[in-house]
Length: 430
Image (cartoon, rainbow, N blue to C red):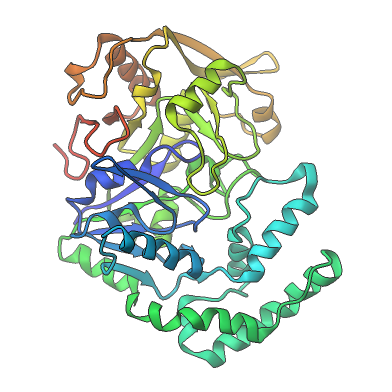
């Protein structure tokens, strides 16, 4: 009964979609347990590029049932736009299931997200403006709208009335925006109700029964460990828990049922939006990593900030998530770099830190302490075993494994679905 979690180990965009897609042909269920359409996955299949936002990457594997779990917040307009886009390209999406307990993004959430960011000025978080944070706020404040509410219009109306009583006061009196009416929000949701209904399930019951039947269930986490609202670089984080613990909650699967927890980490580091980034590069090398790695946001097109690999973060992420394995992506992007720095510790005001500093202030002031490793010139995109890699590339991977304290079981050597070195089976123990 394997339940497997795939979790980002940095600030997102590590290539979780690639790892999920690699396993998609061997699993029975692929579950998105957190986040919304604020973070996407890019998957390349037979040279064709797919940019997935709300849909799990498993949607491209027709034999696997794709599930949007209870921990996700759903923008229905974006959801059906994405479904229609895949259908237009010849991909069947009838195997998609959606939790009745997932929360819905309303138009007022998106408006509040945008005006709040502008209001914060220099203290802005750098959100995507898609209403994700305000939707999670309403969920915690017990003012949220869930998928199941669409099938009782009386309850839906009551919940929207309660939410707008507060929201309209903020929009009109603080932000000088127009008020929303209950009718327009009800009408907005009801447009999608009939089309949504066949997809809606009791996902908790379905997934646990699947595990009882020895099915393989894969959790495809959105965002990443250092965007976690509890464990990330707060306040420059997302509004959910994109860690292994969050995957358990966001899918309704008990933690004791997980057999593998796989951390996805780039061979270098990127982040989008504001917040501290000790190994960030501001020179031509940073631009080279951005250009060669295609480091632009799937949803927003924003250029990602780039920097060298941070082994301190990798160790910390492994501790928080209990990683059994690491999967290193985009090793090919480092080809042609003569000396590759790796951050092995931080200097904070003259004091060496081999682990993450305790406070936000210390992390803001952290300076990387680097060790340098010789690079390689050879094209590695055709490598399919560790032995195929140049010696310096093998040594680099071995050093990352040593520094993380977690075995590396897979390496991405190109953007294609098959451009992977699989060192160990990622579903069953060797």
